[in-house]
Image (cartoon, rainbow, N blue to C red; front, side):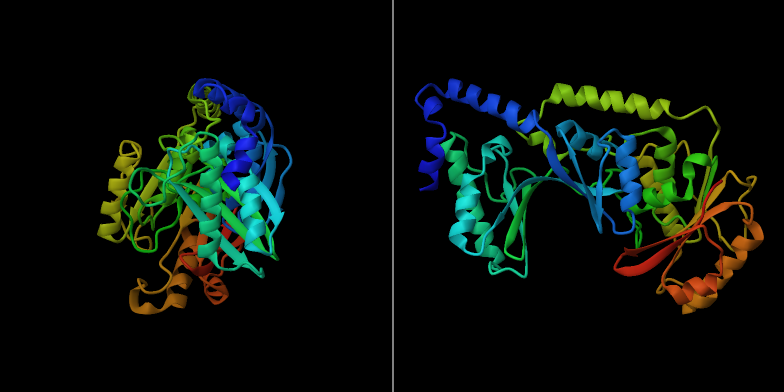
Length: 417
């Protein structure tokens, strides 16, 4: 039934050759997918929405943004979507909003799914994943919802002469993901533009226990005023995330440089135009820096962490810029001048790896060390809980509360002037 309904939309072209039909479809793709603005939802770690908004503004993505917990919405053409994925260091992924409709029965869901022009957004050669979530809705069987949507999408594409997408997990390629979110009997469908989460920069192949995500590290560096600093001290470096993000920010390297995105498989994607955009943005960000000499001190007391950080630095092409060393934060100060241009970043252990298991005592020592040695510096210290924050006893200009590894933590920040 759905294939016949979709076929009626293309009667003028289906009677002619496949080449002519493809030309007509390409014109519709240019007109409706590439030529018009779309609504996008950029997913961000709760607590970092404003930082993500500032990034997107700076990248020329859009001027107006609507912030909600866990992300922000904006309107842009595909160029804006590409810019967001390439430039943002704080976002997790970017979704294109496709459709919104009410559906309390499966017949309604299937009809609406079959009526949407999937041929403008999906390539039949790609495997398709459908991610379903339901809240306070009469349709709650996620497996049945996925089944109905997949069947409707496949028949719609087949009616347009496009091979139906393969099922996720057949090993042929990374799937394109469609999200279907049901809340109060209203379904919102979205298309993933990012592919792998954006915190996967591609260079951190070695990790320590309780690693810090690149997106969180970058957002905290931005909130601390890294751009106004000439020295970064990262003495509990773990796998080196803070240091690598800082080095790339200072160098002007694009966050998405060297990785692939899901939007590169969209029917509207044009490789030459994207290559030009990427080159333009790379030039813009690399030229935004100055000739100021910057220094980065990276260390950890754990020899395995140092080994891991060194391997990641090498993968990131930073082994000439910074070499992690084994050093105890409490026993030795870095042999570099300290002052207003220095930013200290600390993501200490939260519990299991703390010496002697006394978390309050451990963070009390951290606070005393910061006040004694780094009083003139900016700093960002991650603390797990209010009681620990009291033990740390550091003044702050800004505090950001967020989840890290399933633990509610706060970043205590004294910002660079």
